Length: 154
Image (cartoon, rainbow, N blue to C red; front, side, top):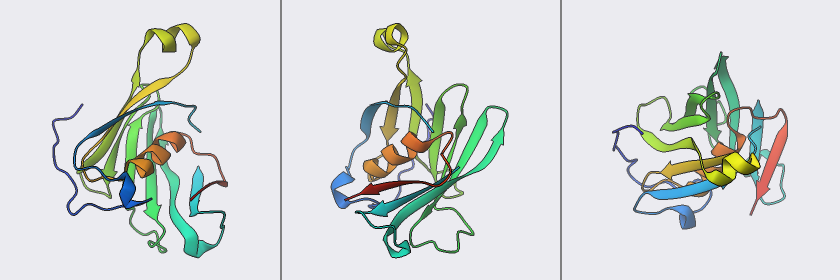
């Protein structure tokens, strides 16, 4: 894990302010990971209800990069968040835009259950004042987002 301790300021809610915490939040996720995702509010598929979209920006050997654009960023000329990591190591770091400010990190967790049952388990650290529901959504679609898939939430 990096020694970076720079936290975003001011806090920003992506999904909801309910998912902001003034302290680091550690999450454990058991998932399969799946190039373009669009996440909408509710049951809508209207562009005005897009929360964020994500697309793979590069895949060089086992390094994967995902550009994330908030719904308000219609031009998508600069990403709002970037996910960079190693598919081989099953680890990634989420940055605020093109900066070096880390907002969350994930790595594969080796547990007896994950080894014995063949289930991938991941440890995720979400830095303070970052919407952890948003981070969980990014982790779920990284490193190989499926083309044309949608997630709808309330």
